[in-house]
Image (tube, rainbow, N blue to C red; front, side, top):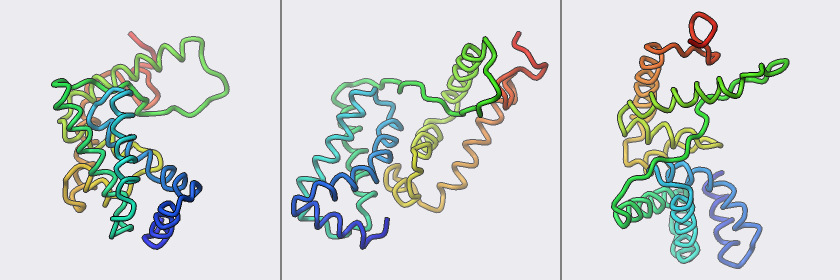
Length: 196
């Protein structure tokens, strides 16, 4: 979405146009959820952080001077709210497991396909927790659907935009290295074709 399109939507939202507000929410909500999940909040706290970010935008609609940076503004607001929630609770809660990898559908799933997927996912998430926190946050944010713009990621994670791609590559390489040390392969089975 271009800056001009966002400016028009913000102006219409200021005038009470629900469709414009809904369009903004649809365009940026996935990004905000990925920022909240990157802070490892549970579903309720992540929802609170996202909702608070939208509330802050609603309260400041008439003060937005750079509409093309609304994604960055919302990301920063969400990040600050996440940090406030974590400080208030005095704890860090692990995020719900989400699938990192989705396998394509085949002719028909094997009887134990669900169990194998669960085992693979559990192992993948266990290995994911072994990579550095900075990598985990970056990869969680980049997993948003649709993928966020690098400018928004840079603001959300407080990192230079030019380092996002190289850092992502290094993080995935670390995870790949951990995966190669296990029996997991691309199809979720051991190298010998079955699970021990």
